[in-house]
Every structure is written in structure tokens, then in C-alpha cells.
Length: 240
Image 1 (spheres, helix red, strand yellow):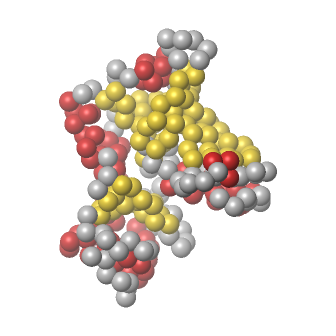
Image 2 (spheres, rainbow, N blue to C red):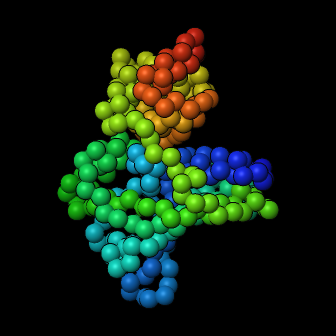
């Protein structure tokens, strides 16, 4: 990532990295070896309030650590190759809390459908990370702390509204989604599903691969977003 220095540029870069990340390094306080941090690489998605969401086994070491001390951090890094010190990195200082919500679980399963049996059969549990502070490094010379309220914006869509948006994209053999994805360079969308929508972008899944498509503006209502998706797909190359 090119270095960014203004406050607005940094905030936007943090929001992009947070929304683009589907895996992160969770650091917990070791219960077995007090004083030592314990790192785990985990899949994540965001709940409708923008909080990172985890599904973790009750037998996992990081789960036992969180039960003893819920304070933790999650580190995200910009995708790509090259000098890691030139890439954007984001550390989220957070407190983990258990989640028991059917709508939250279903949102996670859209991103990771194979994990449904982990939750049902293997006693995996959901946790959300309530972020207290963000520390962002956008490259050399651009590192800064941010309060949560400057970064995370709750999604204004209700669960039924988001479900309707996704239905419209995935209906009729994913016709609208294929056209919209084709407009953004995704030309092989035969196995693609829309899995999450917010005012700033669309999350899609191609098999086990997750991608983020950013919108050209912010759309705060279901009707405005559906109108944008429809108009942005008009005359777009049809993905096969």
C-alpha cells in the first residue's frame, strides 16, 4: 500500500482493510503459561455492527484463554506479496464475548457454510470481538491509534433487509449478481453467491474463496442499494 498520511485517508484505509479481511491472527493471554501471548490464525467475518465474529471450539486453547481472560487482540494484514513492512496492518484491541443469536450464526454460515456442522455437532461456539481501539500501520511513517467510533459503522439494514438484498442478487440463477460481478472484473461467476451486504460494499463467495466488492458511494437504505446494484449491472459484461 502506498503511504497515506491525512486523517481521512487513514480512516478510509482502516475501514477498507477491516472490510476486506476474512482471516486474522487472534492473540490471547495464555492460561497455561501466564504472561505469554498465544496466537491463532482464524477465519472471521463481521456482524451487523461491524464486530469481528469468530466460531471456535470449546476444546481449543484460545477458547480456554478467552474464558479465563476475554481481553485479546486481532491482527489483520493487507493481501499481497512483497515487503510486509510496506503493507497495511491493523491491530484491534478487543474484548471477546459469547454470542447466542440465530441471525448472527446464519450470517457466519453464509461465509463459511462448511462450519455449520462444527457448531451443531462438535460444540463450536460463537464469539464477537468488541473492539476498544485500533492501531493502524499504512506503511513507513503512517502509524496511528483510532477510537472504535471513528472506524466501525453499524449496518443500518435489518436482518430481513439484508436477506432481501441477497435474495435479489442470487435469484434467477444469480443473474443480477453475475452482471454486477462482471462489471467488477469477475468474469467466472458460475459458482458465486452474494453473502453479505452493507452500505459500503458487497461480500461474495466463490467456492471457499471470499471477496469484497466496494461500492462507488454509500447506500444507507435497501431500496437505494438495490437501485444502485440494478443500474450498475445494466449493460455490464455477463459473467459466465
